[in-house]
Image (cartoon, rainbow, N blue to C red; front, top):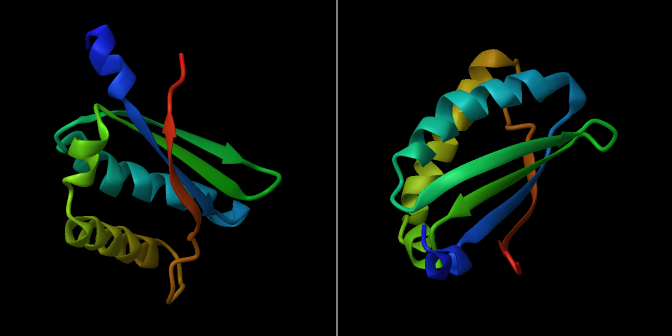
Length: 112
């Protein structure tokens, strides 16, 4: 990436409620469902996954080449992957609903 492109990089920020007892299951489903899908997306660079043990909260930072490529992904496609993710979770745990609630979704722009 040239310096010009570097300034266009945008980071998708996602915060999720991830109960401690389900952390490993959540991580496994993230790796099996979201990771392969993300790697196929045009403009996807990488992602970082963090977990706050005290709060029972996860932070995902997904880096994209630019906002245009990121936003070209249809909401329908994202929702279908989310459904796959939730189905996988339900196979792992005896819950009818997804225990991982989205707390926050936003974007970050690197300053330097």
